[in-house]
Figure (cartoon, rainbow, N blue to C red):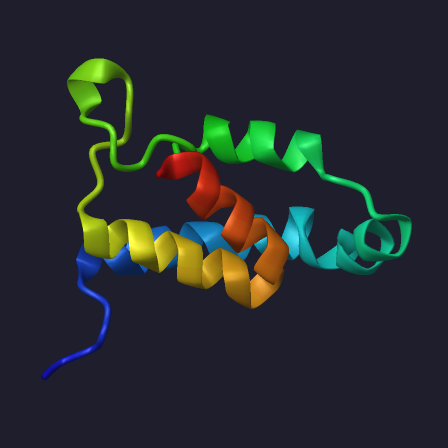
Length: 92
């Protein structure tokens, strides 16, 4: 079985890695220490189309497949598990 990313999954992973490098990784420690929920990060995730990934495009979602959804959760969780979990909770 081939577990490598397909083209769409790789695009999602690259987008999240780039976003995370600038918006998540530099702040993880501060958010954890202060027990802060990063509302602005979630607004930006929404702007990237990551807060309605399983919703069909005709209803305003991203229309991702389930494997693309899992890719997004996995990549966010690598950066900060709490953000990955929160994104998953708000998409299901």
